[in-house]
Image (cartoon, rainbow, N blue to C red):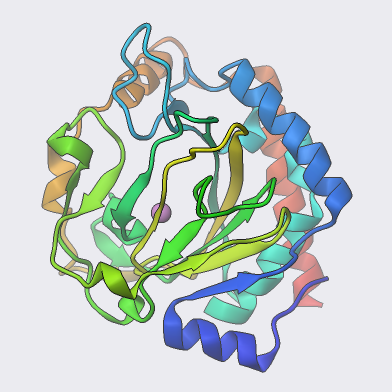
Length: 288
Ligand code: NI
């Protein structure tokens, strides 16, 4: 099981991010690559609004430039029992306390040559839940080496200690899920985090980050697990204005799916159950 040493914990606290050389085995990464390629090839989660183009408007006939699947574990039950998941939870509990729980996860594919840049943003700017606050971190694992050429993570050190900055929908298009920070900040301070396959880049929900376009001939796949601490009431927290006008095609597909009976289907529900049980089992392991 992975744990961070004191120097790593203090690096994270000071800079708001932390690169790690390894968070799981090479065998598991190879297995996950196969699963991810299958999920993206079959557009798993499309109808349910869980799969969409993060940097596009899901227009018919247009190749997605940044396909993403939310909670891919519901479409691939094998993702419920990974060493990555166990290690990431242990690390999350070191960084945000013993109450940290799995929050959500996503799979991102940055296709060869056409994979779009992920704009500068803070993850917290995506939060829809006014009235509560919680600590949140993301653990980002590439399934092949991540480089500046295929879109490794880049961070502004220390930005997690500031406020949530102003954002807008990418290209000012409310159909696009991605947000872009439009406040002034010093992008020359950016630090790139190239990683080996199965390494990890951990960041706080307020750390400004981006990833460049994929100009290589191979896809850049990343698996991200997000964790949060216990929510606390924060009556002053309102809905961010840049989220109010969002009208993504994925949200429309999700609503339409719900109207037609909801759930992801028997297989999806079973997988979600497996994931929940795995999370509970891991939680119990840590309580001992
Ligand atoms: Ni992000």
